[in-house]
Amino acid sequence: MLTSVAVGSFLALVTCSEAFDRIHGANYGSRFVVEKFFGLYQTDDVFFKDISSGSPGKDPSMCDVNTADAGSRMSTYLDGVIKDYHFTKMASMGFNTIRFPLGYWDLIDLPAGSTPNGPSAASARWQNLQNIMPANNYMKWINLVFQHAASSGIKVLLDLHGAPGSQSGNSNTGCDLGADENTYWDTDWNKQLSLQSIEAMAQICADKGSACWGISLLNEPYSPWSGRGISRDSLKNFYVDAIRRARVHLGSDVPILINDWPDWIGSYWKNEASTFKGAEFGKVAFSTHFYQWDQTTDLASAERKFDGNFNSVQDFQSSTGFDLIFTEYAFNSHGSGGDDDPFDYNGLADYFVHRFDDVGKGSFVWNFDSFYSAWGPVDHADKVGQRPIHWKTIFHTSPGPAPTPAPPGPPSPPTPSSGCCSWDNVQCGGTTEYCETQAHCEGDCNGKWIHASVHNSLIV
Image (cartoon, rainbow, N blue to C red; front, side, top):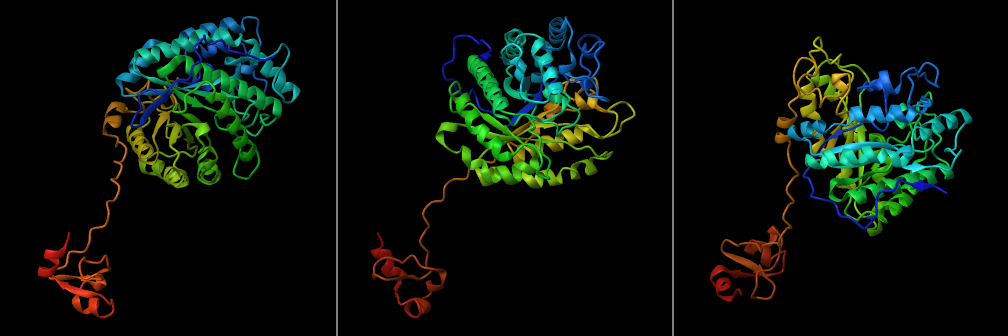
């Protein structure tokens, strides 16, 4: 029998806390789903010390840590990378929300010897993930993140970043399976485990009350635009079940996010979002990620790289009635981010934030921190490349939501200059401009012209 994280006795329905005009957020990633590339404190000298990858030619990922002291490594690592000053720093710059990535092994324990479905080599590596420590042990640091965030007035969006069976083969799922297309998520057993993980995440969110902004169901499910990969119909049906499970614990106004790539948002989900309009689903929103990989060294070229992405999602909100949030964007592929890099990162941040606020309901930069300044542009905001990123100024000048237009009033009757066209010899008729001359009124319009002096004495 599956056991979920014990999150306390409070499982009553909760409501969403104060709403933001726009989300100005940062990802607090590479903590519970450790990615070696980001080089956070104690990544190499503690967590991945003497660890090699199970995928030839790749860096080790979490599922390769198979040592007797794996739990101790994880504890030391989390102690070193979760700090209260991270949150005061974000708040001082104007950030109001963090996105908090978790893996299924942080949320549920599987029966002894059980793993998600997949090839034997992958299953053995997922077992390593599950062996690091029991799911309940992670609650010490999950609670700490919420505590630090609440103290700084920052809300938390929980995100299922690593699903059972891996929704892609990327290391950001906790296990680098050699290529993104190596995904084994889409089986009944793996979906059942995923539902258990999402319900555990919803319980945590409910337990945290107003400190929890919402939850996101599944990060970057794999599928290139050739049609290979995870079926979007399968995902849609899974999300129906997942939202229903989450709503057992979460009030209808706590946002639940569905994530996908821009092309899928603008095509499949634009047509299928109406699936989630029923009252039983509550507040559902969609999210997407913007990345570029081709090198650009000037701001104008970098902005043009995203024209296609923006074209894909530009009218999603107006067409579907569902909010769109950009839960990842980054500053990679422009230079080293060091003193030799003249790229205008502040200008790109300004462009991103304002466009995302205009097209959607806000955004989360990836990531708060990294060894590389361009991948950690919040912690390194004092200097990314040759200049700082002025987040507070950017957020302050970001446009708010467009005002809701007043509903149109009843049309005013035409104001005749010397009379009006009538069909009852008393009131002016509601006619087209064509009838608002005496000749047309009494000719083609078959009305009777009432002169102004008579009209003024009769009108009520």
